[in-house]
Length: 192
Image (cartoon, rainbow, N blue to C red; front, side, top):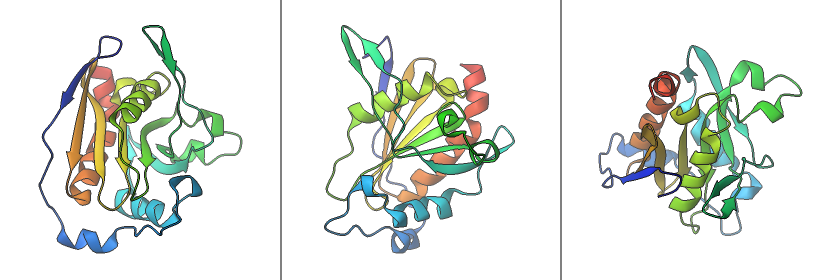
């Protein structure tokens, strides 16, 4: 537990919504790395998630690989980090010279992993905590960890200072829940 935050790990969600979804999954090549951009994975996420709205605003998916999240401090240690993609305000973040506003105007982060790289709860938790400190959505933010093939995990605040981690077997179910968390993020942040 960090900074007085409780952690709730749910059992793996085994609900399957769409067997055909597996035909649309990204196939990783042997030499591919998430930092190289995986256009197929990003295209899957755009196709499955967009159009998406939060607080009446249209959202888009933005590359944030070169933007650092704020440092998280606790018990004489500190950590900062990066993520791969952010889901934020499409109208504003599409304007020139707004890249530095991306985290503040975003509701979600996406951490992409290769087929061989594991999802790391510690990394996803730090991203969520750091991101919530800079986003207008505060504790209404959500983080998705995925390889767009077999790994699907959501990390989000369920209530004030309580974080839930949910692993999924079905990517479609995970993305549906991710969309709902984003759409409800603004109202949830106001209630926490």
